[in-house]
Length: 453
Image (tube, rainbow, N blue to C red):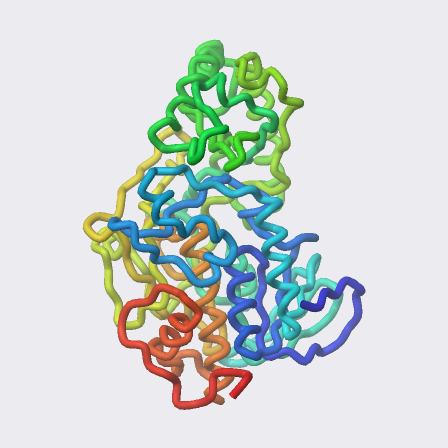
């Protein structure tokens, strides 16, 4: 990995540009670079990692189907290898991660790729399009990037929107988005005060998860009854780290926030910090917090929903709940539909995927309807408000990003100029070789796909 920080105007010799260095963008960039392509990974923030690092929820959401089979593997298994232990899964262990450890893993994997250049503090500010293709993008320091394939792995589809791509935002009835959150971590927690023993193997199990909420809920309910908080959330939601040292709270709730409006985001951060202070003052008297030194508030707002770029196909709730199987499948998802009420109440509509417990995500959802050389490599893929509530979490987003980076590389290898000419069976073949879960015919491309060939 090359890292550039000094501003200069140049036309960089890249094949593929990936915008957004969260789990989707990192996965797209790694997949493309490992296939022998020169990749520029652009991140608007000062550091890579995206929501999973800078607004963590600690919990790793579903990466397996109803039978326990792993349906999100590939790069996600490199990021979080301990997840892929069938015994832990069978025991019902609460699988969490620590954001600093995840960031170190990302940096290590990126640094191992000589064809990959990471540019932080480098937002895309304008896009030049020619007919139905993107010609170049310009970043804040004045550099122009002319590449063959662009991958929008920003959470909110920022590159695509700047290019004029068609998109949707919010629920169909009124355009309102799911509420956002501001998470925070409390270190030095004494879990024995909750009746849990971190000294035992596999101590944090779903069967005991309620002990934490049960212990803290009376304090929070008293706060609510007194009118001491503006937080509409009715329950206590937190997850322990694997080492039994800390709790990560996903406790705040701010409605009416538009992630594409900086003022809206900043106001939500202020409200989130207020809700955290109210909550912490109420629960800190619990014996579990006798030795804590305070809270660490995440640096980034936890956004559940932003733009959804319209692709050649729009994934629906019916597809998810119907365990959809597509001929152009390139990723899978087993996380439930998880819709936090956009009106800001404390309610959540969560519906499990029935039957097999997973559905396919088709390649058509990753191809922007408006362009021939723009892929979608994060939660901004083409889907409805309801479907988005399912595939927006880390494991499927990792699979989406890996599929997008793979498709970008295949287009270049094929010598084509339209992403629709890339056969999904080729994508599945390459993904399968990279230890990713796929279903459907896998066909080796009729051209060289390896930098070693």
